[in-house]
Amino acid sequence: MTRDDLIDFVYDEAGLLDDMLWEDWKALFAEDGRYWIPLEWQQEDPILQPSLMYEDLLLLTVRIERLAGERTFSQRPKSRCHHLLQRPRILSMGEEDGVYKLRTAFIYTETRGDLLERYSGWVGHHLVDEDGALKIKQKRIDLINFDAPFSNIQLFI
Amino acid sequence: MERYRGNPQAIADLVKGYAVHRDTYVDPEIFDLEMEHMFPNCWVYIGHDSQIKNPGDFITSKIGNQPILAVRHRDGLVYVMHNRCPHKGVKIASEPCGNTGKFFRCPYHAWSFKTDGSLLAIPLNKGYEGTGFDADKAAEGLPRIENVRIYRGLIFVRLAEEAMSFEDYFCDSLSTVDNMADRSPEGELEVLAAPIRYMHQCNWKMLVDNQTDTCHPMVAHESSAGTAVNVWERAKKANPDMETPMAVQLYAPFMAPYEFYEGAGIRVWPNGHGHSGVSGSIHQDYDDIDGYLGKMEAAYGTERAHRILGDVRHNTNYFPNIMVKGPVGILRHFIPLAVDKTLVESWVFKLKGAPDKLYERALMYNRFINAPTSIVGHDDLEMYERAQEGLLSNGNEWINLRRLWEEDEAEDTTEVVNGTSERQMRNQMYAWRKFMVQNMESSLEAAE
Ligand SMILES: [Fe+2]
Image (cartoon, rainbow over all chains, first blue to last red; front, top):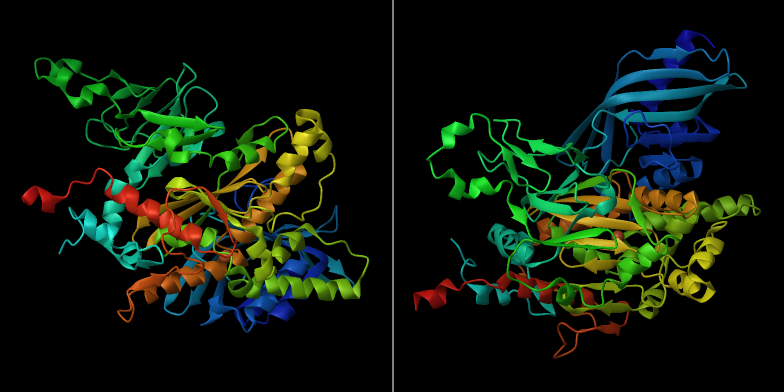
């Protein structure tokens, strides 16, 4: 993988979310991939420290199917989202463990009906090469104001 | 126009039992009166004493709209005071928790206070000589609140100097707190982390009402729990050897049918307390956790350990604004900010001496159900916010609470009823009426 491959992956991943192509987005995850939103500054443990989300493919599937559900009233009207990314920084080319690591500053916007909310932070990608394709081992979202009370965040940062 | 201030009868008329007037949820004047009258008359939860273990440790909280400060003094006791400097009113502590050392120091003019709230020193003290300062309220330091009770670590405070005693207020209802604490082999709960915070654009009572609303999960949460069940069944079909993951064990029971909730029962206590899940609950079928039962039996003996773990109460509301989920170890605090704005803080307790897996499960439950990123939370908040808007309709000014209502329904009693009854919602509103008008002067009478 080249540096450009990694950087393109991060932009393309956000593009799938903006286009609400949830199934295509989910397909970017490795079998044991995780989506994580910590609730503490520089949090290390997703299990014995509280998080906003720590989800595997099964739980992400539930979320995605729910968004399209006939009786998902919190999606009437539907939400939309927008990811504005700074250029990703490559923290590791995986020389030691085969895990590519990137960190990207973002502004995320989620809107529904007349409401619009903005969130800022950093997204950390842990990526692996599976048969020539990059897959997400872990996508981690650190919000600058993780300790503030939010209203509903229904889509994916 | 003030319709309710000084008019206790008009307030009492808002609660008919089988119906509640929408002004209890949408009227700003009623909200102000809740803050001025109802909250001070109640024993209100402000935090847990494991958050302030060492001298100088403090937490800040709110009772209604009142900023509160609780601190561990060097005598080992917890002192509770109003969080405002007696000088210019500056909040003494601005963070949710911390350690202040031996004293508090106001950042504005350096007035300092011992950790029991008493005044320690004022710079350039001679400026107050001969001014009558010694007799001033300010000389007492941070305004102390005397009515404080700690029960199994839960700190309850009553602002009103004259009102119901702690014992009369809670009667037998603290058995849920006992059960939650007894689930620790050491009988102690511990707060290890900040709560999950979640902003709601609705009245705080929407949340209180929802806690024992057993006729909504299979409807409102079909989208989340129902989808979880479907996705899991598909995964299981593809791979029959898979064991039911913890996540599915937490979600799936939300889809239990009406009959399950009917049989599980609801218990009401005096003063608005009550709980769902008397003889069973959605928490009853979680996997056993390795090593836990053995520790419990060693601590309590076989018979008592099984009795503690067999009591799987669903949601216990303590009037006015907390819910305790004993079998999971979660406490939810519904903090009123405005008539249509409520901050929900959901805390997880670590059961001292119990395996970490229990804490892991409680944290998972909290983020699945009580977080702004929780799909179950999305379902509920959508309903609360639609109700907050819908209640503005003049087509009907009443909220209907008639399910399993009976003529002459007893107030302030202990009773177990059908688990789909709206009895506990009525029970809360009877207490609301009582504590709203308690000690309230009637300006109509005074005028006569
Ligand atoms: Fe619910």
